[in-house]
Image (cartoon, rainbow, N blue to C red; front, side, top):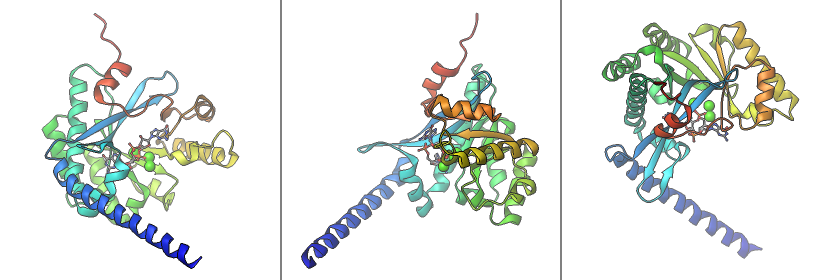
Length: 278
Ligand code: C2E
Ligand code: CA
Ligand code: CA
Ligand code: CA
């Protein structure tokens, strides 16, 4: 028994070493990734349930790693945040997303906003609003076509958050509260801050067909958002049954694999842009 315990420990410790090595390797690769042009964006349509029209689209970052293939943000955003690379990466994401949406608008694509995720470090960076306005000017995208996705945990410092959010709001940039219901949420945020949209987290949608509590929570969030004159969107819809429950609860906007996974820009155009009638 003793021996087995020791081996277990060794095994465990080797595994930790491996994880650490892997992380150090990714970290040094990530430093070069931006300048080498290895980052890219995928886009996930946001759909109006009524007519299945695309009414928005979320940009989600990916990393085309030279040897490991296409990496998802869960693997590298935490490293970017720990190392401070998130600022450079965040700037790249914002510029790329705004540029893409401006190009789509120019090419006669739908006049919809693009949603961009902010990490909490970016959200608290000084002069955030001015710096985002500069990106909008450089790319020629109007502020009302940019929606920033933030989370409840970013707003714990209420006075700081309110000055940031009020400034973004004055510029005409939209704010969406991501992963709603999962953080240390305080409903008072919703009336203190200019928030245009709440995104119901996927964890409430996953079991919604069987779980009455989840269904109650979701229908309450939808009703609350409507009373507060906010838009509401549910994320992570994968099945027709989930869609039907949301529709029954008057949720008008949804995002999820049922309609589309996040796609490269060209695939979005092919699948979701209405062909020009000539
Ligand atoms: P998120 O903002 O909550 O994004 C939703 C995630 O759920 C995305 O994963 C998306 O691909 C996935 N998803 C969408 N629909 C479904 C569905 O029907 N079923 C399931 N199972 N999953 C679905 P992804 O792209 O891997 O992104 C993960 C997280 O990484 C995002 O969560 C966001 O927090 C972060 N992230 C992504 N891009 C960026 C970025 O550019 N900047 C920052 N700061 N964070 C980002
Ligand atoms: Ca998001
Ligand atoms: Ca989310
Ligand atoms: Ca999430």
